[in-house]
Image (cartoon, rainbow, N blue to C red; front, side, top):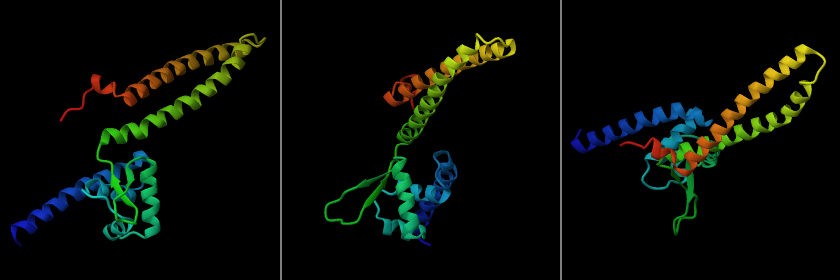
Length: 179
């Protein structure tokens, strides 16, 4: 085997190793390992790829490939790009992991905040009313629950500030990315 072939094999091994690790951790994003492998192919690709090229590379059905790409697109890990003279859809993997983090976790945090703060806002008036209950045990439980909800509100307010700082990039001033 000549040196060029040996170097190509080393490159493929390194990419496969990192790609396998990416695929294993994609469950954080609700993505199956096979779709994680699909992402790693697009991540390492220097050029956008068609579904046909991805299918050839992965050996998956075109339907599975299309579903996987849509899932990655939904999570903003892959984007559809246009190239003059090419009729088929082309896909390019997002290369910036900070962008992945922001695009995925911030909306999840905001959804968590909204759902739980809405529930807290609905529960508080009822618990406030129960502070006047004739049943002392109910009054104590309502008081304890209100205290817990205050702690919850403190957390969700903090989480909102965290989401804002990540989204605006302010977090990177506090904790700068290092190379």
